Amino acid sequence: MKILNFGSLNYDYTYSVDHIVAPGETQSTHEMNTYCGGKGLNQSIAIARAGAEVYHAGQVGEDGAELIKLMADSGVKTDYVKTIAGRSGHTIIQVDKNAENCILLFGGANMAQTREYVDEVLSHFEKGDIILLQNEINELDYIIDQAYAKGMKVVLNPSPFNERLDSCDMRKIAVFLMNEVEGWQLTGKKEPSEILEASREKFPDAEIVLTLGSQGSKYMVDGKVYDQCCYNDGKVDTTAAGDTFTGYFLAGMIEGLSVEERMKLAAKAASIACSRAGAAPSIPTRDEVLI
Ligand code: RIB
Image (tube, rainbow, N blue to C red; front, side, top):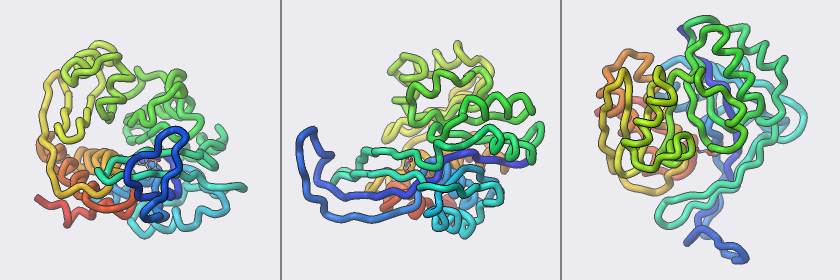
């Protein structure tokens, strides 16, 4: 069984600010750093650093060599990553003094994928393999349909949640990993227990992982709900904490860890990611997470 993560690769231009800038306001920043990021790249790196094998597919522009190199250096299989003309995806991220962030996203090469490319990548995978997806690439609906038709297990982190998800057939998703805002956008419910209940009604066969920030996380599988507390290793920058949770959770699932073990592993890894600056650089290795 192989894991394919078909997802975005971005350069994150990250600015430390006092507070998130308001409309019409100009604010001086304390610090600026460039990190490798993108929900796809972060989640692949988290899976690899957790110790599992993962293939990444996605596109970068002519400036994307550093993104591919970091993934390869982290143990991700990058054979299917494609370089095209133009610019890679990038973001402008503000991180405030409470470690909260806001993100402006430019899709670049992530949004220029062709169906021919998707077909070529998927031709290397088969029934029973896992495909992990987020919502920062184009042709997401097509990828879900094709992967499902092949019998792959489709895992979706519906983030960022926007109108592009409307064209996706969510009945084909085997596992959703989302935060409470995405859970609200998916179900129309705000309370975690109501989100899970509404998800069960809409997608009776799907497993649901719901992350709740400082309130921990919940995992609904086979009609049972498991709770996990949030750890606190300090809060510097929450960017990629959710991606770290997703990658570690999936790696634990593949490894055959019990539900409780994989929730704990993912929560601990995400907490460490929060205690460090940046996206990909904040993702811990497995030996740092061992608890
Ligand atoms: O989830 C964090 C990521 O979202 C950042 O690395 C940024 O690139 C955006 O895609």
